[in-house]
Length: 563
RNA sequence: GCGCCUGUAGCUCAAGUGGACAGAGCGCCGGACUUCGAAUCCGUCGGUUGCGAGUUCGAGUCUCGCCAGGCGCGCCA
View (cartoon, rainbow, N blue to C red):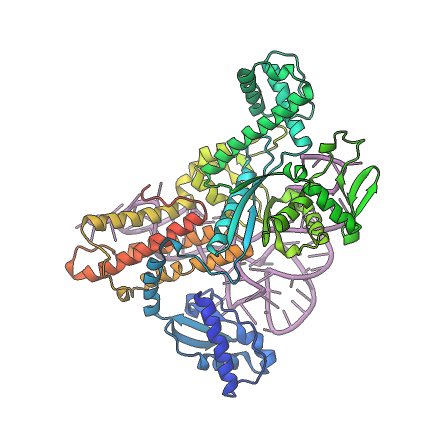
């Protein structure tokens, strides 16, 4: 159990005890929250419960605080409880208890940081899901870093997590891409084939066209045009997906499932779901198209599910993205039975959120099971100039290039350091020049430093065996232990609020506290009189190594032994 | 015009549910290596939380109105 929950429990017990002793009037016990005070002088933990209870208890907050403090039961973890104005109860943790937590961390090992959830859930996190029509952009990198870190945190919280990439391989997507690829392929064969006006301009398509021409000769040129476009499109998409999977793997991002949008139609699922909406009288046929009657559910306008034949002739290209989304949410929550579906979307899709949630509700699904996490855009600067990015025009810095320039660990770290709600304005020149000052190296350095200490100790024959952690009483040692104990809280915070940015901030803080400890406390001493303390401190730094490594791993960042 | 996000130290950003004197890093300036990694540490300076009202014991946080920036608002994907 997290110490903060334990303390909250003590506060509740104290409230009840104070009421029994007639020190407080009877009132229903509220939910009690314990929080970290901003200043060290206010102890390790504090609760503002007295301030909130003043009205119900009809007493001055400070008096309530005093009553609570007087009735807190004795506890091995708590050294001191005080009431302070205007109405806080402050807790100071026991040094001995803190020191003992080093053993707890060592015993937990690589699993330290795990938290037992209130309820075990089967959760799907769907992320990246970039159109398979070209290389991944830096924006997709942000999506990947956010989604993967969230998935890691949810797993640490004990949930069963499935990581999914939704492949937009349906409809006119494949044709558009195929037409561009076909043109480049034909041109590579020396044919006079015009490039489509709205085609994908990137140089990568030219290269792919040349590769197909080299590999298959004029095989596709001789078959019926529409068939060639379709087949080239599908092959090209498969190829792009393989390349993108490799890019993501460089960032330590891997998926359990690459889910095909097309399969939603081929399995007949969309037809079934459309019928369910019809049964709810939420489907309207007008202007030759099929509409979702979103206005019936309070939205501003209706939305097309299936386009009219006048707009697009081919039947399999007529369903819209919304059509897929509606079938997909049903697939997630009903067909595959996930308790919760988490989507990570770029902010440009925020207008789609209400429609998907409305559709889920219309299908009788609890919209609380769906979380759509939006992240703002990444803008890149080079030489002070904003690098404009568009997959259509083929002008962009690819995620691969960014990884090449900055390094995978720094990329992952920097893409989750800021809250998803904030745009990232990233200057490539600065990142490359100051890469040594990148916070990720600060954190990794702490880990490598510990590895080096342990190596040094091993060379001298010093071990932690039989180390007595009760010798850990130096303020810097206790500060380090306090910091390590925060990891489970951070995991819980990240996973419940879907805010991965707390993790890198915590990592920086933990590393800083370790570095400070290192400066103040020598771990491996050559003085035989210090042998016992050396053993205890070796335990402490082993624990610190475990916590740093886990923190980095949760972010998909390596924890190097040397650097 | 409407909707969503953002505005906090010179710069980049934090700040669980409304809590105590709003915190870090970078940069600037000044210190610290004859035993474990100086990619480090210690210290100084730095604020009308975009502006103005409101709600209440208390607001960076909630409400309303302005200002500025980003993103949306198609039978596009």
